[in-house]
Image (cartoon, rainbow over all chains, first blue to last red; front, top):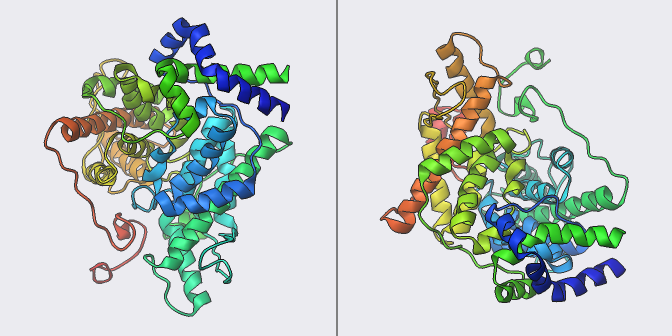
Length: 244
Length: 244
């Protein structure tokens, strides 16, 4: 708290001070377009960030939902270098990048967040840890406290992939069994699933960051077959022999 | 000590932001935490940006290569709001996001660039136009003016997909035929291909942005089968009848 108050006081009066003290070096620094990473991280509340990601999804989709929830909280609590990052820039990540069904937007945003807030030697292992969790865990687990859906049971799915298309299709299949009727991509149920997924992933990212910065968490690297860490059989018709 | 280090980190990271903006606008950013998009765009030189992307690839991989080349040039020529964006934040996009082989990092970076610099109604169509070009064009076309490879002929490939894994594997297959020996993922030739691809995509992004902002270019939306714009047959064993 003391640290936070100190920072707040500095920032309140500090923009002028910073500029005043270091205009020369700052201008050359700025002209090179370099801001040193990682940016400072303070502990965030996963529940609060999750709620914000859920709402954010319904504003500008999944990637923005996650990015704005985490970076938005850091803008509020740390300020400084975070204030120069327009969180709306991750809108494009929605639906696996403008609907192309590639990398799940929640994971895309998470990659950028880890890149911004973790040491160079660690951010890829943070990504590995998150993506592996994502593709092996029944999701979404977040339950909203408002809206039409909060009181109803809601289906989960294991994606087996970081790809939007695969993740969504697997969930829709599960959800169709769960609801006893076809749940299509363009349904409200699928949107709600992606809103809850945004909240779930945002909370997980913050839990990982809290543990990494203030606990003993060590991220682990995922090794994969030659170049991709995904299961080859997702796309390729291959025998077990070929995979081994 | 901790307090002092934390403040030092904040100031180190924040100095570019405060210096690049006027004190007044920086303070209003600080209070609102919002930067309006799109950011102002000025005409850039595709060749210059391509050279920068080529070099950037060998520093921090493909997504950084493209993002830093375009946004770095805008930081230099426009300054202002661009100075608060740490271009290194796109390092994670390399190899389809930390090597996961999903969305090609050059396309990931391009998505963020269009999101930052084009109107809300247009940035997804800009992405569609770029991704469609990417997956149907023999790439890379950029030829570096330095290094071991500049004087030698260099193979191209059509990716048929925005996915890193698919794009790289198809190129490796072509390159193996071209060179008459197996070109593997971990080869220098593959790295050089991705460096040239970063340069090629960065130049294309700038050509599109120049035409969009200062010419008559209208981006077009790509419609796809229900939810993804990729060719289903890339991953699914399906008949033509099922696709129609």
